[in-house]
Image 1 (cartoon, helix red, strand yellow):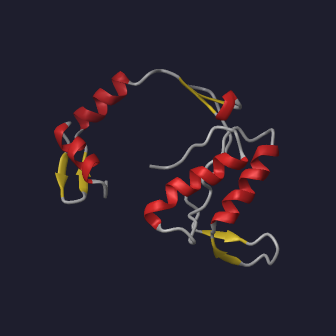
Image 2 (cartoon, helix red, strand yellow):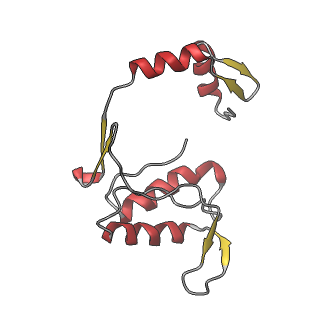
Amino acid sequence: MKCNNEAALKIFQEGGAYVEGDRVKIPPVMVEQALKSAPSRSLITGRHGKGKVLLERNVVNYGLGTDVPDHIDTYTHEIRPSVLKDIENIGKVVQKCENIDFTSNSGLASDVRPEMQDLYHYKVGSTYCDKPFLTSA
């Protein structure tokens, strides 16, 4: 995989992964060890304990996808790059939807510097929705 974080690259290398520049190759033995040591279930809650996402076998949770670069404008119906306001609006809608268990950044805000996107996505997403916030790595 590609990794742009020097501290993470060091951790991968010290843990036994093969690191070449910004590329990391995780050997099968590391994957097997991670799977053996992982808990059989995990509970994720939102702010103030609101919403619960149980991660275990045979449990289905519904939520939003992440990292969507383009957005269909609610008012003009045009396809355009996602902006932070879109993520805010989506959070407000998800908060009201009882059939959606978790939220996510659901966009890549083009009006925020890429290295700051994760912070802004979480801040906006969790401000308007107190369900569990899941994101990509």
